Image (cartoon, rainbow, N blue to C red):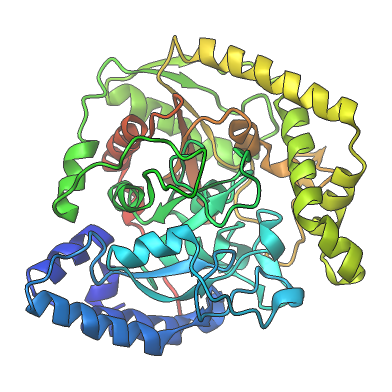
Length: 474
């Protein structure tokens, strides 16, 4: 690995500003690493290297000319293949859109570009983001850099694998049922699911959708916080965007001050399983994390919110969403849609109004119970994923410690039950199994409390040091 690729985003940002290295050098080093290693990982599936090098030259000229620099000046990034990128192929992981080239940028792409980021291309995703295992008929599977025989998770699996392999230093992605958190856990990086509206989504598909959100993924909590500062804030095109502006940062290094907090006395609820089946290997890795929080001075109690009804309401609204988005595609293209999208869309088309009424009522009662629970604690600590990275040739996890999993969603419940609450949640590296496979800890904060939550995650990360471990690739 070159020294440049080994650096995290904040370190590179400082080097670029001090002119210790040029944007062209940083970009070229990451391109070289992708070309050398991504053949085995398959994370950056559409590459825009010529555009990146041209943009890097412009970035160097801007710095030389004394122009104001964006927070992400010169930093190599990539965009999930669900995010539209003007002039760059965006397939959504579907053969129906294998040659699709948008003429506009999605809002998250706009904001990262405006902040000076240099996009190296698009990262792999399952078809339309359906599932937490990144494989599709256009590009095939993304492999876990820590073990190429294992899954990188999903649906932001390409992003997580590219970050872990040090091919890029920042990435964005979406999270409906765990698509930022699960792959972060599988690949020993950080993935933050923000509160609905914190990071506005445009173009609009459903104005009222608060289940699917966009957020940052990075190698460290501080890097994720930097990207959140760029991605968040209102947009006049997005009705439900939160009005709160992002933190005002004159330079990237100032993000560290936003994360420094005294966690002594912080009341943390600890749940080893959220009442779900969890692999013994995952339990074993996470068990010491409870003591880490205690050693940091947190007041840790064994407790979890009552999440009854969350499974039913999440599945109902997810199915409704799939029917609304993909029903026309299913009717037009039939067998060209993959099994996950087809099944979930058919589930949505079969929903009754009574089922939607019930899901609405369940969501209201869940919010009431969760709100009451978080008056007694500030953070919930629990598993991100119920399993360690699994065989990359599987379609999805069918069994957890002898408990059958009947659909492609079942094994992701530890993430999607949290999605149903609308609480912000982050996956932070928490250790490795005896086979060397990464496991993340999920920290869940109060509504709209991303920045306090990031402070807790930052303290945990500093105390453990697991985020510093990089995979060894051939």
